[in-house]
Picture 1 (cartoon, rainbow, N blue to C red):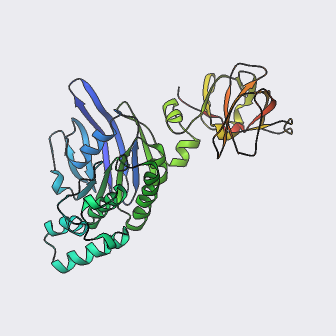
Picture 2 (cartoon, rainbow, N blue to C red):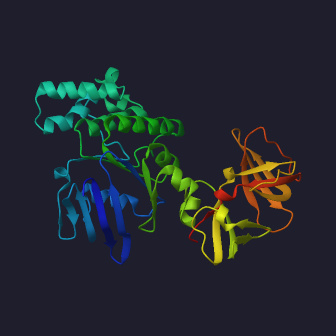
Amino acid sequence: MDGLVLKKLGRRFGSVDAVLDVDLHIKHGEFVSLLGPSGCGKTTTLRMIAGFIDPTAGTIELDGRVLSAPSGSVPPEKRGMSMIFQSYAIWPNMTVAQNVAFGLKLRKLSSQEVKKRTGDILEVVRMSHLAERYPAELSGGQQQRVALARAIVVRPAVLLLDEPLSNLDANLREEMRFEIKRMHDEFKITSVYVTHDQSEAMVTSDRIAVMNNGRLEQVDTPYALYTRPKTRFVASFIGRTNFISGKRSNDLVDFAGFSVPAALMAEGVSASGPVTASVRPQAMRLSTARPADGEAIRIEGTVAQSAFLGETWDYLFRPANGDTEFKVVAPPADVFEVGAPVWLQIDPRQIVPIVD
């Protein structure tokens, strides 16, 4: 199978399974992020892909060639991969150009080829004017660009990135997310990116693999993960949400204070019994007037709390009947006073059944 393939990959430390039964196929040119909280197994998985750690179960293959297995692994330097570390790991005694050229010289390319490829990649990362500077003379964002250039200039089969933006301040992180995305779109290198920051993963990735307790919870596009989470963990880790509990009864799903035709809800409603669902705060609207009749769910209640965040309002809606409160996000122009009577409107197609 072409691309990078993890088959039933596992790594045990003593009696603890840091990674367990991970199956993941990353296609040529695809950018996939391993996303999850600290201790979920994402960095261990990346280090196994790099060859720094051997698996205790399963295999890692690249274009049909086995790189890692419990019986033995290909050394990191023979995998054709580049890795960008959290600490940048650029040499302080070398200039920007020397840092970038280092890997090319190790590959014994001609001096003319080294000079050309170094110059070309420095243009791409917008660092040509700083080619003779030393790392101590650069900002954090500039050092990260050097690390990116050094990793990409050798044209690796796979690019590995281990939380590369965690040492930058918020503004630089946001800038570098788009820089990494731009460079991937230009070079189309197969990339695996480890992060605990959902915004980084959402901006940069073609697909995101959400990990929890060593296992993959869901692998999907950023849009699908947000709008159609499959588990409680994914729904709560990717953005914010409201969890509601109900019960399927014939063609209806009964929640506290309202019922929804099962046919109108997102796919995955059980044929009978308890139902747990996720409703995003952005999937609802508040209004002072009763909404017109239609498929949308209408619930009467009051505003229990409000917080203005500049770009949005955060409201807490309390229904008149039922005890399920809803977090609602509204645009800046939708101003409601605490205690004001309002109507909540929910698109039933945005009520997503999940595995609790």
